[in-house]
Length: 175
Image (cartoon, rainbow, N blue to C red; front, side, top):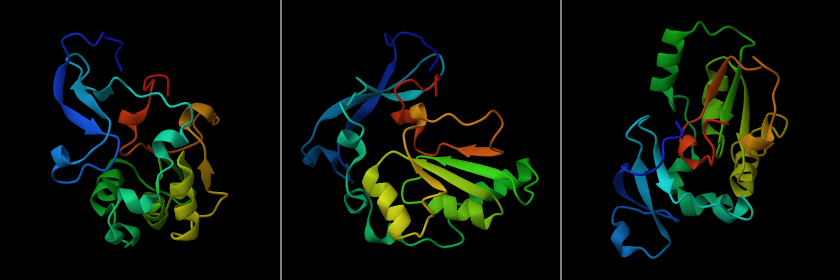
């Protein structure tokens, strides 16, 4: 993130290209190191895999990524984070939120439930389709795209969420 070279960065562990589960040593897959920058504290995969197509990384069925229980949304999903958000800012009707890496849309539903006019970006075709079909997210509100390929007007959103996305970006500072 800060541009500091990777020499001297601390290795935290390994990350597989599939769901790791409780005992990743028993799983087969491609492994990369997980490092932490000693200067800016960013945790990142090294080497960062660069696919020919984004779907090579993220075009996986959501069912292979999460357990069946994950596919149910309840109003208390993200409640703790939304409480902190409401403590930090006064949420007024019509304020816009953007969920980058919306997945199947659960955070979008919770932000909308909290009063935001909520939009999302998702780069995985299967996750996008699950958000639309299972979670009833509107195709007008959820955009199938990578953040690097989208350009919104300045100050278009009042709140932007990047939950579990930052570590997947090739150039986080540019995004």
